[in-house]
Length: 329
Ligand code: TYM
Image (cartoon, rainbow, N blue to C red; front, side):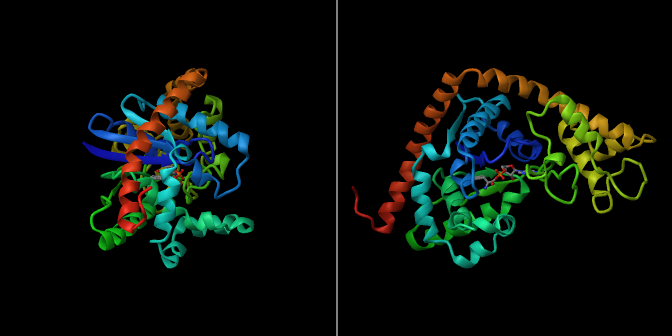
């Protein structure tokens, strides 16, 4: 069976970008693949976190994974810090990652510009830990949004470098990027990707319907005052983003959407996109609340997940330690 793996940082509440760029594409493959999905809590501490909030978001995220349709019987769902092999292989891989290549990572450049008072070594070495997350499970594919492509590419480089020295230890994984939804932009800032740091333009999966409706009504469209639903990413990025969201949820093509809203302005289109999103999220929200009420169940899911994951992860780690020349314990 082929293997699939991905993770999300519980550094904020899950949003539409995480859902459309990642989770929505994880689900469809659970019957064909062995799937590993985790909460990347180790990664979140590269930026300061409030401990109680981090703990809560991590559990919420697990409940939302399940609510989005990831069946814990078919997928291995776990919390990254519960599987110590991530940190262990992470250290090893840091020694096979170059200062120069880490300096070129766009996420590091962005985050170090944003958090000038805390440019810590973990933030810099982040991609080596992510490479460990991935390579431990020897996956064929890593389904992520477009912004994480560079991280999967550096993972391939690190794995290839390691294999060239020690033989075939790691499988070289491919990024799996969705055709639509791979890059969702902020509703209030359609030039930037949707992110929790701009909450006005960010639709969180657990937002109340009236909040979602308001965010879409206020979505920035374009400045040419054409008031016409037409796909033109260059000149009308806001409209293109809304069309992309609408298309991903309804399965309609851009041409079909243009036809549907012909002669109608943004005043009709924007609330219509909001409605589609509200309807799609409602069952996920209800299910999340139901699952969150059962803490014992959630505990059993993440414990079982960690035990399955560390069994697989340990095999790879042992192999790596042996190849490097560490004495067997
Ligand atoms: P993170 O936590 O920032 O995002 C999680 C997933 O959501 C996708 N995503 C988006 N997709 C479309 N439009 C957006 N606006 C948008 N914002 C986020 C991301 O591409 C990602 O797929 N480093 C990773 C977490 C990670 C990981 C891993 C991923 C740690 N280890 C191993 C895969 C494999 C990150 O920060 O993603």
